[in-house]
Image 1 (cartoon, rainbow, N blue to C red):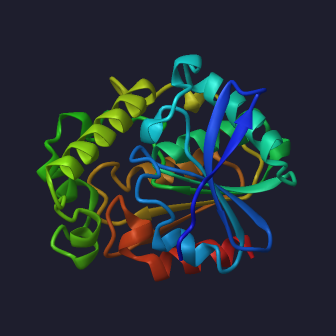
Image 2: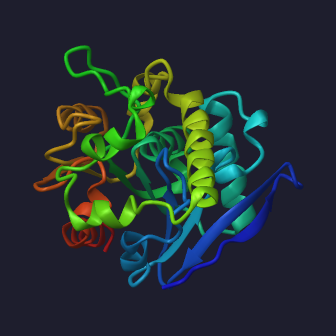
Length: 264
């Protein structure tokens, strides 16, 4: 499935947001991880689009987009998401799914505006901190080391497909530029640690919540799953074997089955 983004104006042109949109049925707002949407509408999103209308915006600052200069912190990002929901004309409350850093943004949105979120799916979200299980510092990892941090099996065909060597020097330069830009954007919300106070607000989440974790997650330990469950009233945790932090693309079948079974 080839899905091209369309540009959506938010807050009278303050933000011009590329948005991938595909599928039909109940709407599902997808909030991407620190890697952005540079790989486009990935197979996990394609599979979800068979059951839902998936709306996947590129957040300001990611994938060489503008607008991050107008977002100072997580609170500003949550206001942006509210304006984006209005600009997209989504029917609220809407189902929201966030992965990793996108999971913390989804949780913050659900805490700030419980009325906007129908059901919430958090996939290995950032946002909390355990001294005994610190989140790995992905900003200090060299590019060749990333697959070992993100995947249960760095030698799997999935990794080979996602990390295909660039065809030439120009493509290599573009890949490196986007990776640096995305890491710089993520750093605004994750550095020096990805705890920006969600623990003070997460109790406000009212939406039924599914929390998914890869059992072999080396970036954010599965130990965080029970902590999220303890802080969100109507929540359940499912751990999936054979998956690391990139659960949606490592174990797509199991992941999609859990999400669709929960959302209905």
